[in-house]
Length: 494
Image 1: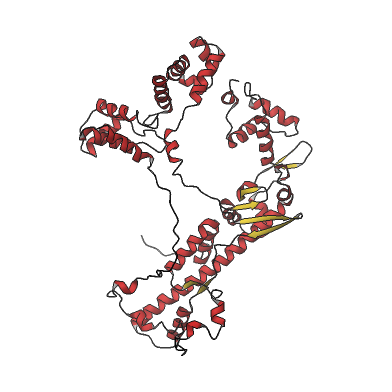
Image 2 (image 1 turned 90 degrees about the vertical axis):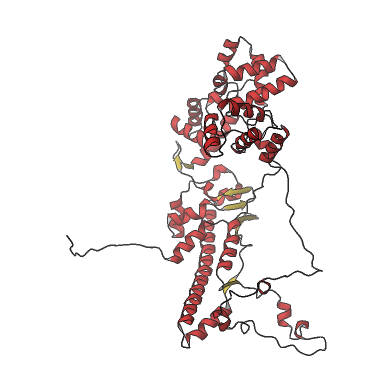
C-alpha cells in the first residue's frame, strides 16, 4: 500500500573540488607532473603560463622577428585574435590529416634521444632454448604452454594435471600426464639451472644434481640426501635430527649446508637483473640543516605555473553579451564547464601545496631534535591525531599526506609515515616511541651469538633491564614487524 510521509535526513557530501583535492593530496611528487600533463591534454582551457619565457624578445620593441628582410614591420596578430568562434563551431571531420600534423624539427636541430637497454628477456631465452631441442610441433606447443606458466622467479605455477586439461580445452592439444612431464624435464635442463621447478625443494635438487654431474663429491651427495629426505628438518633448522639420522658430524653437515645455501632459490631473477627497471625516489620535501637551523623546502620543480586560457576567457565574455543559437548554447556550456574545471584544478593544486607544506612544517617542528641529530632515540611518539590537531585538518587528510610522500634529510630519505609511531612509557615515566624500542631490539638481535640466538623470553628480559617494560607477545610483534624470524630459524652453524 502506498502512503506519504515526511522524513528528515542529514547528509554530508563532498563537492567535486574537495574530491579533486583529496586525489591530488595522495599523489607524490613523481606522479604530479604526469597528472598535470594529463589535465592539460584533457582540458583545452588550462594551459601553462609561459609569461617568463622569451621575456627578452617580448620586451624589445625592435625585435628581429617583427621585421622582414627589407626592414618593413610585419603585422603581427594577437594570439587571441587568431581564434574565431565560428571556426570552433565548424565540423572538422573533413579536415585533411596534414593540417592536423606538426613538424617542429628542422635539419639543423640537435635531437637527443634517451637510449634504452635492450636484451633478451627471461621467457624469450627459454623459448630460444626450446627451439634448439628440435621438438616435433606437438611437443613444441606443449613446451610453449609450460614456459608460459613459468613466473619471473623461474617456478612453474600450474600442476601437470591442470596443464593437461588446459591444453585439451584451450589449445585443442590432446596429451597425457607422462608426455607433459617428459617436456617439463627437458625444460628443467635449460639455463638458468633450476628453472621449471614446481617448488623450492625441486629447484634445489635440480641445481645439486647438475653440480654432481660436473663435479661429483661426497659433500654434494650429502646435500642431495638432505634436500631429498630431510627438507622439512632443513627448513626448520633441526640440525641435531639431521646429524642423528644421517650419522654425520657437525663439520660434514656444515659443508653440505654451505653447498645448499650457495644455490639460487629464484633462478629466474638472475636473468632479469640486467633488464630490471631502476626506481628512483623523488622526495616531496627537503630539510636542510644550516648551522643548527632547520629549513624546509617543498620540492615543486615539476609543478608549472598554470592559468586559464585567455582565448577561452575572451570567448566566454563575448558570448555572454549576445544572443545564441542552440548550437552556440551548447558550445557556451562546454566552454564554461572547461573554464570552471581549469579554475578548480588550479585552486586544488594551490591548496595541495599549502597543505603539504603546513603538514610537513608541523612534523618538522614536532620532531625538531630528531631532524637535527638523526638519532632514532630522539624520535618522539607521534600519531596522526597529534599533527591533525596542530594543523587543524582532518586525520584522513594527514594520512593522505603521509602515506606516499618522502622527505630528504641530511642523514637519508625517508617515507613520511615512518615517523609516526605509538608511545610507550618506560619504568621512570618517560614516554618513548615504539620505533626507538624496535631499533634497540634490532641492535640486540644483531649482537647475539648466531649459534645460540636469543629467544623472545630472553629478549624481553634484556629490554626490561634497559628500562623497557614490555610483554613477550609485544616483543614478538615488534620482531615480526622488523622481518626477523624466531630464534630457531636464526640459528647458524659456525
